[in-house]
Image (cartoon, rainbow, N blue to C red; front, top):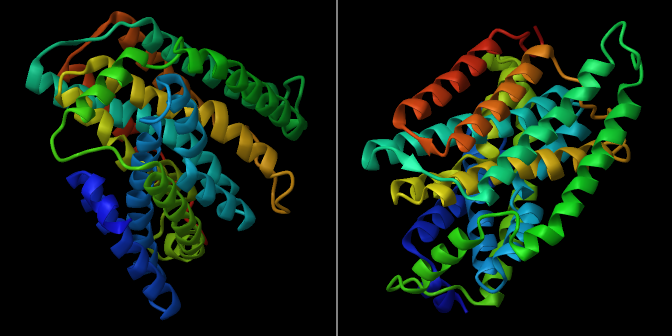
Amino acid sequence: MLSRLITAAGRRALIIGAVALAATIAGAALKFSGAGDILVFAVTAVALASLASVVGEATDQLGTRMSPGATGVVQSALGNLPELFISIFALKAGLVVVVQTALIGSILANSLLVLGAAFVVGGLKHGTQTFGTSAVRMTAMLLVLSVASMAIPTLATAPGAPDFGHAKFLSVVTAVVLLLVFAGSIPLSIKGSIGPKHEREAEAERKEHTPGEPHWSLAASLIVLGLAGLAAALVSDWFVAALTPSMARLGLSEEFVGLVIVAVAGNAVENVVGITAAARNQGDLAVSLILNSSLQVALLLVPVLVLLSLVLGGPILTLVVSPLLMAALALAAILAALIIFDGESTYVEGMALIGLYIIIAASVWYGRPVGG
């Protein structure tokens, strides 16, 4: 089985798998040897980023045995496992602000940083890139609508607003609605009405004809996915345990750690495939993969965590966040949608998206440090 798995894996998957294994072992050794919290924090962050990519690769391999629409559903369910585990352990540790900002940061990182990087790479290599399938536009519109829904609890529970003091109730109602929207999108996803159907098929066909990179067997895909998921759960626990003391020693705020560090560690590496697609001049595929990652967080991960927080025994996760973060989230979704509906992108637009992400990250750098 091992030799078959090695033969079936591509070079990129092998490298990332080796990094994930090495970082996980190193993280375990440091954790149980009593090493400094900052070192454990840094190593486990690398492990989580690489494990996220391994989970994504295994999920993609499972998709080669399913329809394109079913592949999108599987990616929605499994693609955010590392982020889910980090958030669960962080909620149990009482780090609600970290979880809130990490969820928002995940959407921002995908919609601004990764999408911008894809536009820069694709634009510099191929010039103006075009995309315009109805599936891509539908994804962008759903992202705007889901972000608008997430904004309501913040606006409606502000002092003087009609629902002031009822953040928990309104957040739960919003979470249930978002999950219902996600459930309603599944039949369309399976039929291919939502999601980059023809692009996924083209990518699958490309993989089929790439010499030396046959598809993984079903057993190999499941084994890798299971092992990566288990490792992500363990490493997430170590990561969160080292998180609070590391923030205090480095003087970092919860907002910056959640918005940037945790968000990037959880999913940015996984979206290298979107940037790679842009480099191949596959505009629709690149945009679909990147925006679908944001949409999965908004429609699935966020509401699941809100509901899970009710039974975890720690503080309740609500959707009430600072006006700055909510404005940043709304701007990111709207800007991404405007670019998508325009039907083309340039490297300058990519630079602007990355610049906006840097400005937003800088805006939370001077938040109140933990212990400060």
